[in-house]
Image 1 (cartoon, rainbow, N blue to C red):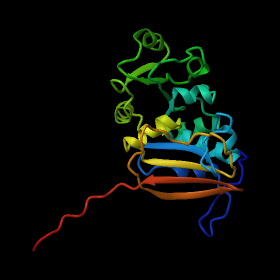
Image 2 (image 1 turned 135 degrees about the horizontal axis):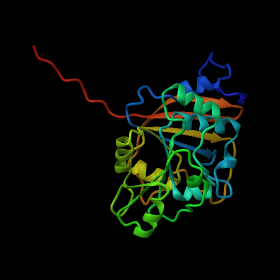
Image 3 (image 1 turned 180 degrees about the vertical axis):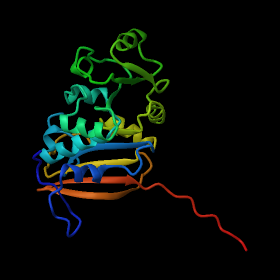
Length: 261
């Protein structure tokens, strides 16, 4: 498989990375540990979209990493607005990725989980009609019963909140289904809610070498600023002028107990 040149910015490691190298670079140490990974692309001036979608900000290398992250995920979590705006189809991986998953004792395709409070979803779309794995729709107790009944014909409905979808309940519900490697692809409101709940373990950001100006939204949005969350840089890759980063949550460790003699 031919891929664009992607190299590490670690001195002395400037050989182009293969797909296997990228899979290793983005793999977690223990798949049994529940991990929420968020993936976004942004412009140099912090814009998340061009003409309302993020696709034009990326490039071939961003698409390769995008696919690698899906290959490694148990479930891909996306807000309903992003599904509509970005034109999502069925969550189906290519043959190489599906073969790799099969060789590593994983289902051929990750589960697609859509977050929607209103349940205004097009049940005739490829997301549902061509899904290789039955999708999940995550909603609230306030969701319209008639819409919920219609969705249950094509997807499993999971309630994760009374009035609003609660990130902690989403993570717990997915983990209970054995879906511990959670990849969130947005949008900004969903990402913002996970930041506010301190439910983000990893953050993968592609920095596009472009300026977009205008009224482009940020990659996260919320009603009020959240407390700052610290992250460690795990790696930084480059493809021409595009940067691809992976950050891991800097969670505090408990101090060792003092001993007395």
